[in-house]
Length: 446
Image (cartoon, rainbow, N blue to C red; front, side):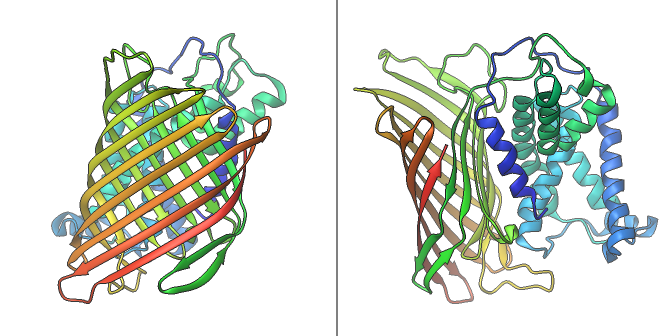
């Protein structure tokens, strides 16, 4: 998974300008049987690689190990933060897309993430099954899976030919490998059509290259971090009145990563609209929508790490302020279904250094735009984690960022990004901790 963040970055750059007029959407026939067979193939392939290539002790399975797993039941595993909060959701995305790219809807595909994870936990490893693996593979896999499915659909175009078609097929397959495999075996990769026949929505946002950033904090000296790539994308038009909405017809996706050890320098914040209702407004200069959203957060760097899957209510609004100014605002409040955050006292031979938690999350997004003066984007996230496994206590994590970008030539802009992390932990049997970190970097954006 070391290069996964780079794959996201390169291919999502393509998505920024990939919007095309929608044609007739032609979904493949629903084949739940093929989806189930592909999950069996994925799990068997990963197990075979671990058994023959890595000689992993946990791959030594037998009917006896299956029986022990059944009798023992689920527990919390001590694996590394990246393994549980990124690798497992990415794996769940593969399960999800076995169904999604075989013609099943979002809700029909969701159980396949659960089924694939349950099969792995009970049958494919000799370690006892774990709650966190099942939850993060299922819930994180659904969120990442639909985002990757939508991005791959945005790249594909069956009207294209020649090198353009080849690059689109390769790009979509990198973003969504299972989708690429299914297009290959169905013959869709070579099929030419007169219509787009893929899901098309507007994508807006920016891709930016950040210079070396500077960090300061109460317990660290002034630290310079590597240059980074940042993506802030909005998919769909959530505040246009729609007769029917499907899950993730609107989502936002933020990614940042720096060159080097990407296991320790990557962040993803994604949130997708599961269901929404337009609210009538007497004023044509404003629009409102109330909805239910799924959040997936993964922040892992040398300074802080935390992750969460959240189900949240949200209120989305847009205001035309006059003189070219437009303001979009979106407060969210929700319940953290599964989360994890730093812990100074949690240790294990597998690298665990965090608590497993549930809790509450609040978030607000603000975007002020002007065609001449650029865009000012700010978001604030407040996480309240209650430990369910690990060191008993609570953990508050606040993350705020402000990005200002001004156009300097056509679609190229120059800007700056400020990030603030705050963490306060209170433990029942250990001394608490409080930390503040502030970072600043310059951006060159498109």
